[in-house]
Length: 261
Image 1 (tube, helix red, strand yellow):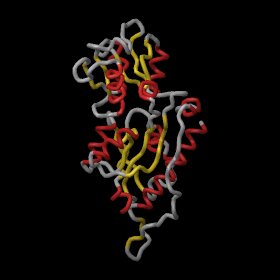
Image 2 (cartoon, one colour):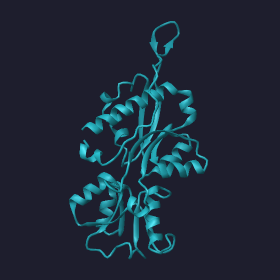
Image 3 (tube, one colour):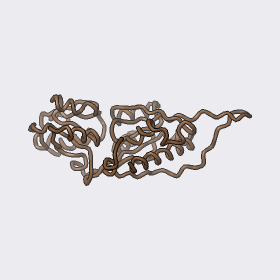
Image 4 (cartoon, rainbow, N blue to C red):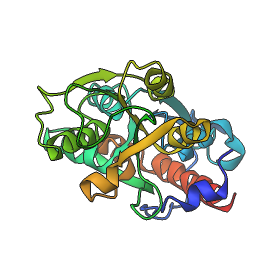
């Protein structure tokens, strides 16, 4: 279970209207309950603690199973989630604000319902690690292999920005390798990548294991304190507004629990 120090490092601003009184479905003349609306939520391996906990701790979500059912679908990267969402395979998902803006600018129809977290240059932002005994630095990236969790994601974007800041061409002067975040540490230590991306808990684990150095951070290299948001399909919200409001109420309750523990 994440502890208070972990979440003190991330500012959470819940952006959602207060839930309205919830309607109960009645079938025919009897008092049979209507099936709850299923919410298919896409999540990832980092920065989605609220979404995970809503699934594994249903006691924190009193509306779940009554006013909505909750299907959590895991994806390697936010871009993979956004593509599944666009294909109609998800009703909602998580992404960085950068990723959401990129999707919206390319015609993806979505609405942001909540903000999960915000990175900060003063506390924590995504780290890009190299082996401590390597020659990798911001000034020495040419020819290096950079590990990312997916293309067209904010994590790739910050790495590309660092390469350009070093005066290099990210499409010509470095190599890219897609690696799941859970395997990034192994890829770095086995030298399959020279530089890898490590959000939040992954960075903490690698730092505790030792033998790595922080080459740059997402906030430090870009000046952007990235946010992680939850978006929904606007048509789904319009059709199942009360179910979404019930989910949002449970999301707020889960976020408060995380902040208190």
